[in-house]
Amino acid sequence: EVQLVESGGGSVQPGGSLKLSCAASGFTFSSYDMKWVRLSPYQGLEWVATITQGGATAYADSVAGRFTISRDNAKSTLYLQMNSLNAEDTAEYSCRAYTATGREMWRGQGTQVTVSS
Image (tube, rainbow, N blue to C red; front, side):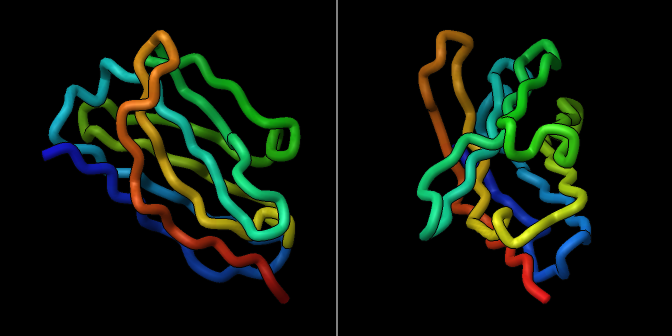
């Protein structure tokens, strides 16, 4: 059974940091590009970051320079280090697995991040 399980969300004050994790199982994690996306009631669904099978990364302009996506293929785990958080980062964050041709294969249930003073 394929699973993507996010963790690490929570409440944080503006300017704070959080590190999200996405534990993958049931498929060959290293063979897939991975993405973080977020869903908020105000901004809708937004792509956050991508890391390819080969480790290349890309970021949305709204998070570039503040967020870092990484992966540990030995642990089948995806990460998102989030620094300098602000209220606009409040959302449910989920991880998704894609083929190299861009087909979405699986997604996690999400973890809530709330940035508030």
